Length: 301
Image (cartoon, rainbow, N blue to C red; front, side, top):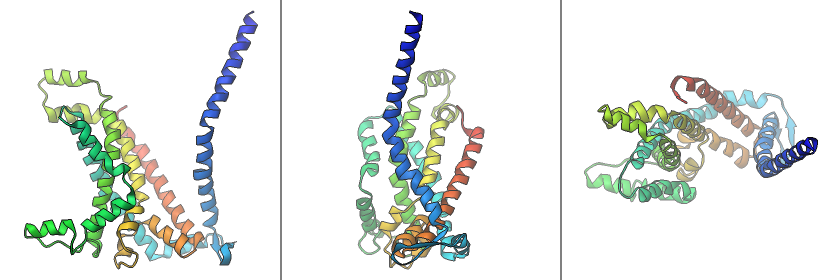
């Protein structure tokens, strides 16, 4: 009798494992086809040169040698780093402030959360076109507002510095809603008893934020920083849709992913473009590894 029971339990466990693997099979298949396989294919293409009719020939590390000598590629990395340095700190900071405010007892929290999350569910092309119109130097809403208060608005999308600022503004505006939702979930996991004890000790809002909220939300904040950093290094759609291809500021604002798109799909230099994106992939790996190592100094689990 005991052997039959143990055998039944063993079969039951195997059946549960089989159902578990079956449930994750679609996700694993999608990950393999859409992520893992393209990475290896891109790595292989980076050692080849694309010829006529899509044929490729193996050329070793020549693409990497040429990429490291290409001033346009180096400038695209500089542009990407500038965008990342500006977007990540400001975006995460504003997202945290908004999340803290929406976690407090204020009227209309649901409406505010919906409004802040709208950029996430809006079509990127439509969003870019609206912002492009707003930044128009002649009839854009922003310059019209500046003119009404006696200031002369710049040619936002026609000058390198102002174009980068415009792209950063749109990037931050687009990410606040998503980051806010994640941080809000982390804030709601903090037990109210900590705040009640702090109030008994006479702590004010600022003290409670820096002594309770900020330390306890660092695990969620760390996740937000990592995902925002990776997303910023891979920026493409905002720049591609806001800056015209014939615009003279393109070399000063185009990202590495945008340059990869130009070489791979517009100039049919898939090997060269693959070498560019593999270098960016390595940069993201290094930056993520450094972040994982540094988390022990500021993340409190």
